[in-house]
Length: 126
View 1 (tube, helix red, strand yellow):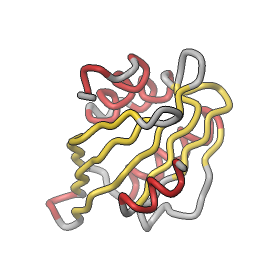
View 2: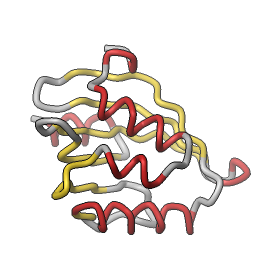
View 3: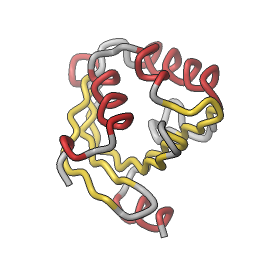
């Protein structure tokens, strides 16, 4: 599956993330969606609903005000979509790869969980 084949809400949310457009990003999530990050500075918190996702975004920007992300591989796992993303923080001082499981709801994203390894993401998807 290529990024062009992604469900529209996920494709558009990723584009908004890469464009640093918080409100557009949030608009592609269900009202009760959950976002669970793996970035060490934000890890361990479950962000719920649009207000929670807004808080996650603001926290992300406070830690990485000028981040870049490049979405690589995209896999359809049936109940989940797995993306592999290369993340770079400000001035390339932080760089890592994350695996993100996305659960699609009826029309929007219901869940977004990121992991530090492919094995963790696949285990969570099982």
